[in-house]
Length: 173
Image (cartoon, rainbow, N blue to C red; front, side, top):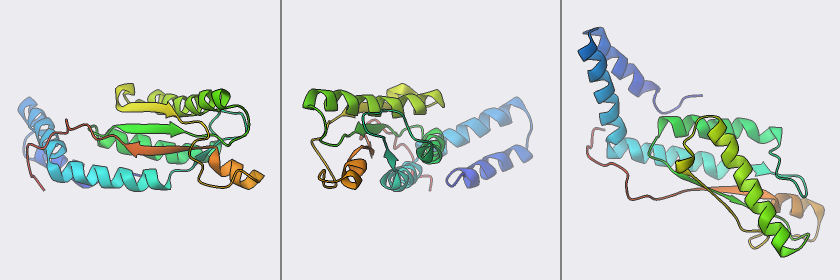
């Protein structure tokens, strides 16, 4: 489900209607790069990815780092946006419930984050754009007193990494 680049690609392809030479293909690439380098484009990418990441729901079974099938469509949407927005970098943070010892929970939360990063990289996202970390059971968002709360706490949280390297050469939009 493309939501960001379709209009951009349409405009870029329209430029090819007027010429079909190698120079036109190079012009198309320069045009796409100009758009991707624009502050407005980067802002749109940032906002779109933040919306998707806020709705992301990746939970795990107890003592497991295996991604459930219910999360795959959402992870695929992240991949699609990441392809369209090459300047974005994503932090993937794994969490656990409070069952088990602290060292085991820290390792499990890291393994959960790494399994999500592996899924994203297997679909073509550059691993340099992803950072996995585990925080164990340090930051619950629900009570660990019952099974439902513990299930909620066995999760992944996503955030965008500010790099300071994003290109802001143009204000095309």
